[in-house]
Length: 514
Image (cartoon, rainbow, N blue to C red; front, top):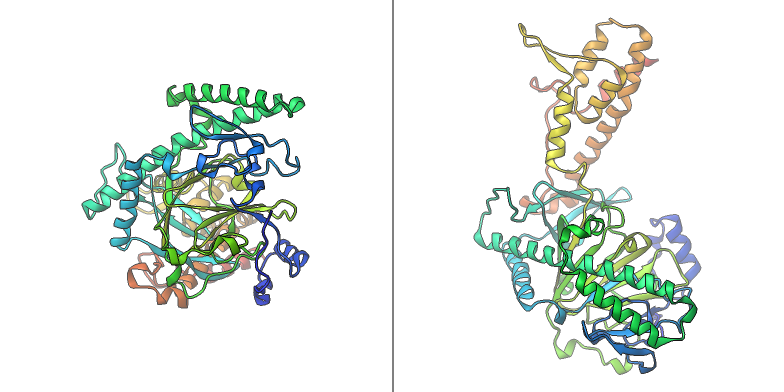
């Protein structure tokens, strides 16, 4: 049986004016009704095409259970009885229950969470959505490879580095070193698990294709899967270099850690489509990732008291006392959503392109919760090393007079000027060369037209960031959490070749083109 949210909740109509057109259309189609969703109490939930489900989530319907694999002690199910239209829609979600994860790893990771909290390392992020600034309800810290960054909702975070070979990293407290060390151990563990899960998924898809014509032969299905599992177990002992094609999409370079105490929040947004209740994080795709890379999440919350629990006999839908991850096919009203409970120490993996084709949200429980979300972030243009490299490229077009030490450009070719101006501010030198009038008017206009759009973009970004740093929300933050508008200089600063405010420069260039 699928569940729908309580009819007592009414959507806030004022917020509808701010949502994208496709979201508005979906809300209009729903009207006052709710989309159905599944929880572990539903037999249909367990008949979905997971490849492996840990025994604690085994289906309660014996007629679909066709055996237990002796290698990993996980139940295996036939999904032939479900409608083909949606039985495999969640096949790329992989769950790993807490009791299948080494206890030593649980201990050091959960200790790391508490250490970071003790040292006040979790901050709310100032993000921008549809031109407006918001503080995230969840507090976060980014930890990962030295020099990496992660951008989401128009905010770029810089990693606190975890210990790595060939890097000399100094921590302000030995407890913080131990915490970061624990998180890179978790990162390594999740990397191995993700590779294994992708291998198992590939084997599952292959076997299902081969058995399409004999879906009623459950025992044959079980035998073939058991054989596949043996192959998977053997493959785990091969060198990691043999998993090159999968390693690229599972080599996590950072983790975004989250913390939230729901009882300390004055308001939590309600889930708008299924009536799932309080959301800690709204429906979204994770941003700034390598295409088709796997996202791995470790969840930890303290166990609630008996008084927190709702009597399941009278409960419909998810238990509001427990934290859940919600999952749905993006902008699809035909496929039921999922609300998956997260016990302390549970992990889940969004494999392959699941993060692209589906959306997920985090549904709040009653207890405080930490999570560590491991990602393969797209950092090709978002590291300090990259920025230094680009500056070196720009400086190659710079010439210094040996007598006067005056600076000039080696080349005014349009392509060279465009490349340099796109990565490094040499506008003053370009203007100086243009002002000499050595070329034709056509050449001058071509050069100005080349870099003027880049100059306008830079001005708009400066204005936006300055406004964000000075907005009321930013000013309300503690001093150590306030965003910094840096670099920032006065327009008459003699050490700077151009003013910070480029409006006048842009206007003069536009006049030259008239």
